[in-house]
Amino acid sequence: MGINSDQSVTTIKPQPEGLPPRPIIPEAQRAEAIAALKPVDGVIIFPETTATATIVALQPDIYVKGGDYDISTLPEAPSVLDYGGTIKLVQIEIPTSSSAIIRRILRQ
Image (cartoon, rainbow, N blue to C red; front, side, top):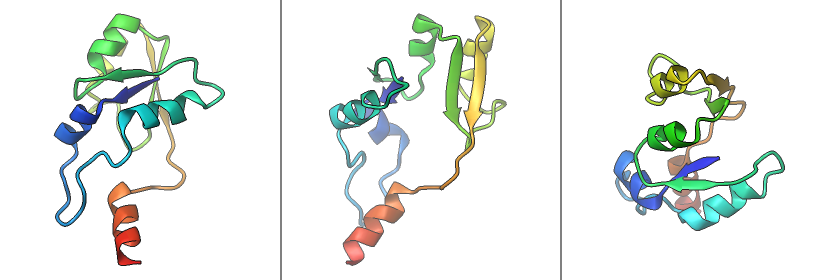
């Protein structure tokens, strides 16, 4: 499983006004939480704003992304399809916004 580095998160996620800078959970802690999931064999922290370079290097058989994406706009899609990989979009059952969570905590 790949996760964005702290620096790439800072680049791709705008800092909402009045909220602390992103990410609020450091990359090492995010990687540890993901690595603890039973189906995950390993975690790679990638510094780019997309996982394309990591995908090209590893060429996973199946590339999984959240269902809030669409294959036609997924930046990694051409690379996955070029080497014959499959893309699976996982339906999001409970939409979550870290900004909304932070705002709720700050109000309390």
